[in-house]
Length: 155
Image 1: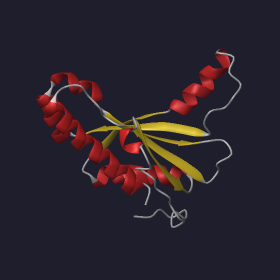
Image 2: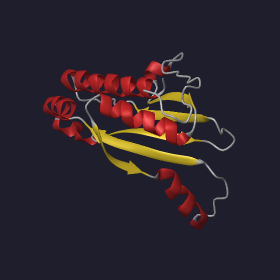
Image 3: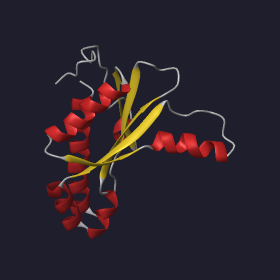
C-alpha cells in the first residue's frame, strides 16, 4: 500500500548486509518523508494482525534534555519508537522461558538524520537470548516477524 504523498518513490531496503545476521540491530532505509514511512510502518505492523500500543518520542526527549546536559549536537531530525505486541508470539516466547518477558513489547524505531532530508531509517533490536533451545527458537520467530514488518514497511 502506498501513501498519497509520493511514497511511490524508490524505497531502498538493506537487511542482511555482510555480517548483519550477527548484528544486534537490523536496519532498513526508505526514501520519502518521515510521516509517509511511519505510516507504511504502522500499516505493516497492522498487516501482521498487530496494534501499535505506544509511540515513544525519543527524538523529542533527546532534544529537550540535551540542553540541560550541555549537548549542542542534534542527533535526529525526528526519532520515534513504535511499540506493539503479539499474543501468539509472546505466549510462545514466555512459555519457553518466563524471563523473556524482557523482550516485550516489541519495538521498531524510525528516525531521520540531519542532512538526510529524503532518507528515513527503520531499526529494531534483534532478540537474542541465553535461555536455551526453546527460548532461542521462540525469539528467532520474533526476529523473523520484526524483519518481515521492516521489509514490508520499506517497500
